[in-house]
Image (cartoon, rainbow, N blue to C red; front, side, top):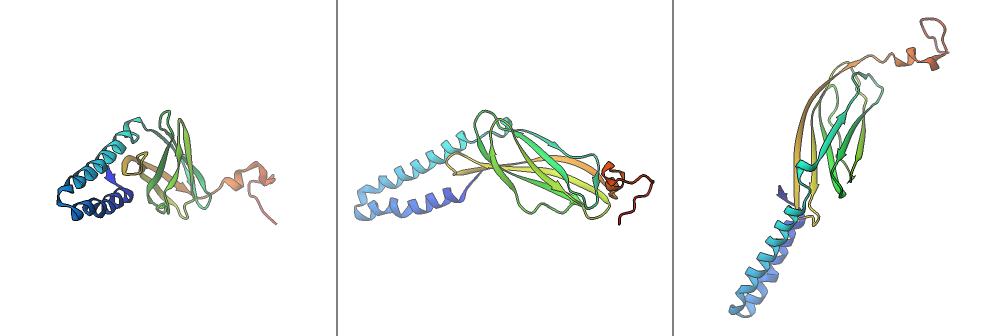
Length: 178
């Protein structure tokens, strides 16, 4: 768990506000402690109200085989319990798959699916090392992040699906397009 930029700004802007009464009268130094205490209480409350990682149920699905140049769906089903939560998801990819450009973000309630597509450009072995999940507390003061190791390896083969497709309309074993 780590503080967000909002928490850092809250404490940074609170320093001058808390020191102002002490500059006016030295007996008002207690205002500094009260304001610092309120900030810490808000930080702890946000940490306690944030979605615990143990309540997340993550189910990734990927095809058994990927085909060159043809995007295939990679899906992650996330269940976060009864309350909705904004969640960011990032896949840690390797092998012939390029790393994902940006995290997929969205609200997650009882069940939500995040879909992506993988279309490798060459043969080899595609690896999904892990899934990273990140979310903030309801006040936006703390951020939680977990890494779920997968270690899933998917072979990438030449794309012969178009030739084998019934939409091809060919009667011979080899399909010729005009």
